[in-house]
Amino acid sequence: GDNSGIIHKTTNGGDNWISQQTGFNGYARSLFFSNSLTGWFAGYNFDSSYESVIMKTTNSGDNWILQTTLTNSNLSSIFFTSQSTGWAVGYELFNPYKALILRTINGGGNWIQYQTDTYAQLRSVFFVSPSTGWAAGSNVIMKTTNGGISWNSQTVGYLLYSVFFPSMLTGWVSGAFGEFFKTTNGGINWYSQQTGTDFFLYSVYFSSAASGIAVGDYGTMLKTTNSGDQWNFLSKGNG
Image (cartoon, rainbow, N blue to C red):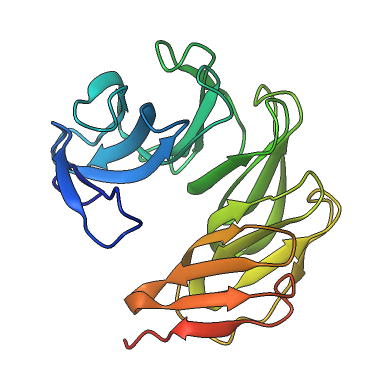
């Protein structure tokens, strides 16, 4: 999405894209679809209202319905493990930057905010099961094993933007200045991997335990085929 609430859609593998209006005049920060029809996005509007929203579609993005609005907050990421159960994370703007975690068990009809003592700008959330998930943000990774009711935090990196786990034990996070970290024991320990770039890496995705993609500033795109031990440039950003 972009800063006018527009979402872009493709039906031919990315060869062509069409724009879809959401009715939200702000930044559509995170988008998640549970199937070809049903999806949600989390966004924020940094005008005088400082509002964050969650909106839902049931017709592939042709129409969007507002589900919840939060003031003085920034929602950065949304993730669902089923049609009914999902989470959204971000941070409160004036608390200062207290971690914000929301959960729904009815498809977004209601969102419950969970209290946390962590002060961090959460940027990404990912669940491998309805009970186990991680959230990452400013020098912190948080983990839950009870569906988001409680979270344990640990200090990792500087400013993390994306977390991804293809299995219960193995996962990665990417962040500012090309930083990249991997775990093989469910997040108990993390170790650094070299990416060969100093650009911010905003998103990471692994199709298997070996093959992954990371994308970031200025069109930077990296690929690994050996679990992140080595990264090759598919596109080298110029900035």
